[in-house]
Image (cartoon, rainbow, N blue to C red; front, top):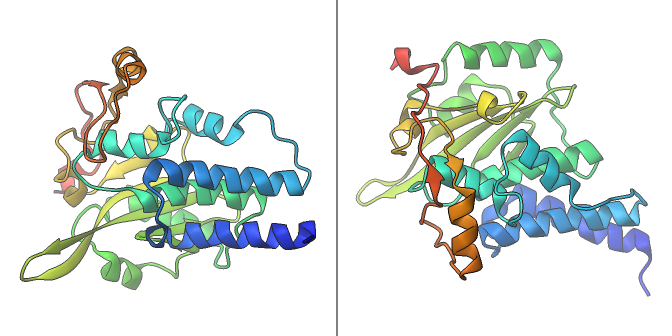
Length: 252
């Protein structure tokens, strides 16, 4: 029989492997979220960290980056509601769960930014410096080495465990091959809505603007109870509101 130390090492390697290379895994987005939480909770069990219910899901729901509360793919639903035609969001999902794994101690991050450097980056973001015309290559020329990279998302982490995430959208165009652009930027705030903005290029990918529409929970639950299953590119029922304008829109 293998020791708990060996089992812990195996689970930790699996968790880190998925977080670093989400596209290499065969999971769909809903299974990906469920698998990440299960791995974190299994590690907590081995380490005798008491867990009641599903605290990660509850924290994400309260933050506004997971809904509805009773499904397994709540993080991806948030991004799909904002950008229903933008494809999959595995990198964004893994960046969210990477923050939770790091907080507990299950993700080792090497390049932690000191407060001055992190605050400087925050100020540059708020000024709109990265709000248009950036791709991955240009970002890496202008920014320090990322603290963590998951798929197409570049993450920067402060000593206080605040996160900044640059989400890259990758596309294939016939005759031109693969190309990418910066689609959105996320940073630690009181709520997801307060710490999320689309770039000019990201704004052009969605018909809904930068405001995250509210889920029509009554309609959703009625359809779900009747056996409705949503396709990857099929939007969930939402209550449309007047979208707020991007804080960077005057720069475009």
